[in-house]
Image 1 (tube, rainbow, N blue to C red):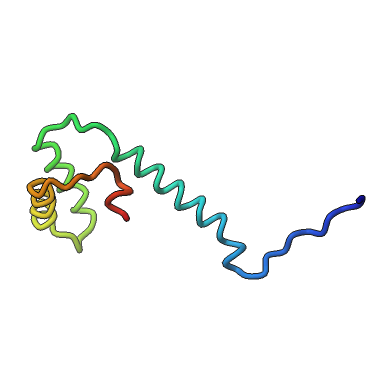
Image 2 (cartoon, rainbow, N blue to C red):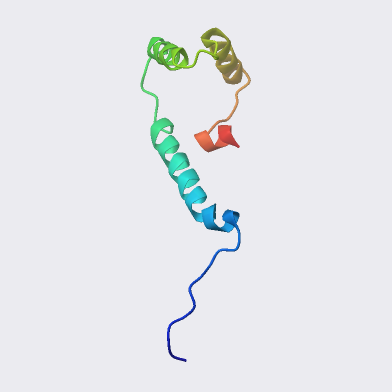
Length: 88
C-alpha cells in the first residue's frame, strides 16, 4: 500500500454540517452550565432584580407570570440539578 488516499467527500449537506452543529451545541451547553450551575449566594431581592432585568430584554415575556411559575416549581419540590435538566 503506497500513495495518497482518496479525499473524503461528503454526500449530503447533513453529513457536512453534522460536526459543526454538535460543536455549537456542545459549546452552548457548556457555557450555560458554567453560567447557571453555580451555588446561589444571593438574596431574594437580588434574584427578583436579576429576573426583572433579564425579562425586560424580552418584551414577549411576562415577569410576573415567570415569577409565579418559578415559585410553583419550588412549592412542588422540583429537583432541577442543571440547565440540561430544564432543556431536556
